[in-house]
Image (tube, rainbow, N blue to C red; front, side, top):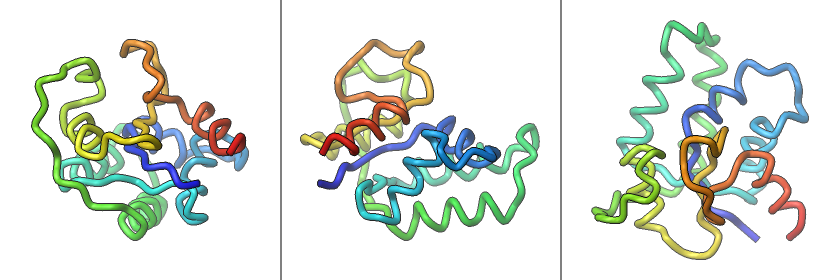
Length: 137
């Protein structure tokens, strides 16, 4: 079964500088190429990814950033954001939440690096929880 996801930028940051191929953030990026995960992407989200991944504070290798963005863009499903008055997930960032709301269906998940900043909901998962969910299917 395929899951549709919206990656939080912190998850992408966690996937790049690691030397641990078994890290959850790396695993959920790898699952894009197998077809288990289809990223949802709007122009606003792609721009946010570019801004964060190219931020000088992180000092990420340009080739690694380019490779990650190419994979996401190649396999992503473009989504036009939905307007929404439901602010329950606003801490995800409005462009991310709007894409989730547009594709609101079983199997669409925003993936966060930490669930501390948002209320606990069954449709918002960490990278580890996403891998566990995929492995149970």
